[in-house]
Structures are given as C-alpha cells and as structure tokens.
Image (cartoon, rainbow, N blue to C red; front, side, top):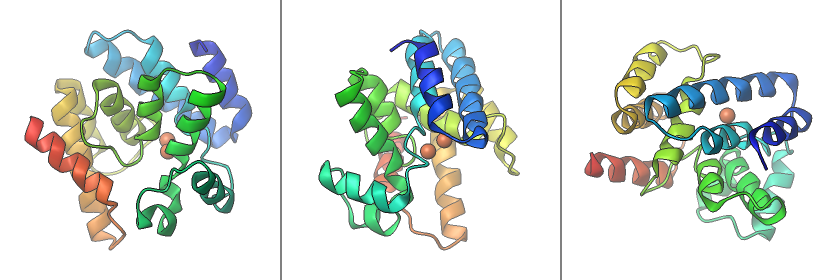
Length: 186
Ligand SMILES: [Fe+2]
Ligand SMILES: [Fe+2]
C-alpha cells in the first residue's frame, strides 16, 4: 500500500472529524520525519492508518482483540480504548501486507512500548501534538520534539502520565514500562 492508498482507506473508514485529526498526524509525522532525515513513506502510511479501528464500537473491539489474542493486560479490557492500535495493526499486517515496522508504530501509538523504534516514537508523539491539538503544554512539547525526537517523546510520555495521574485515571502498565525504558536509553 502506498501513501495515497493509505490516505483513501482512512478517509473512507472514519468520520470527517477523525479524518481531520488523521491529516494533522500526517502533517506532524512529515515534519518530524524531515527534521530527522527519515524517508517519508513509512511515517505517512503509519500516520494515515493509526486510528483506522478507532470508530469500531468498543464492544466489538474487545471481541476482536479476544479472538486475535491481543489482550495482554487486564487493563486492556477495563480501558478498552487502548485496543484500537493493536487491532488495526493486526488486521493491516494480515490482510493488507503492511510492513511489520509500520504495524508496530500503529500498534503502539496509544501506549508506547519498551524498545520503541524512531518510527514508533514519531507516530506516538505526532498523535499527541498534531496541529489540531490544543492544550496548555502543547507548544512546549512540539518544540521539544523538533529539537530531539527521543527527548521529545520522553516529554510527551511524561505529560501523558502526569495528566492521567491528575485525572485519577488508569495508567496502563505498558505506558510505565515504555517510559522507564526510554528514560534509561536517553
Ligand atoms: Fe488512537
Ligand atoms: Fe490518533
């Protein structure tokens, strides 16, 4: 699948509002890829496809994840909004023969994972700071990503963990593992 096919598949699979977010993630992915001298193809395909399963009803997402062996933590079922990445990645790899590298970036865009590649960091971060996002620290996070992809990704993870703590929401164990791992690597 090339970039324009990925874009069309996204456009026909989601609401206008989510497609607008997706275009924003693609814009940010392009910018971060250029700043890091990366080829654009993989970041753009991953950006266009990252939320492909987001609008599947949550109950159905849980069923699919159970059938496909994608439930790894009890939190996956208690907070099933984390499943849409792994579901899209599994389906795309099997049905559309998308590369494992792109699928990993799609699978880990919500929670992160230990040992993240640059492509995974780029999609995780672009999802959080795309031009349509508007929260107090967003400009600071963008600048930190422009300066350094790895340190910027760590700052994005820190922001997300603080936000979840403040709101007293569940912090998924994979997010904590991803954060500890990246902190150690930097
Ligand atoms: Fe998502
Ligand atoms: Fe997203």
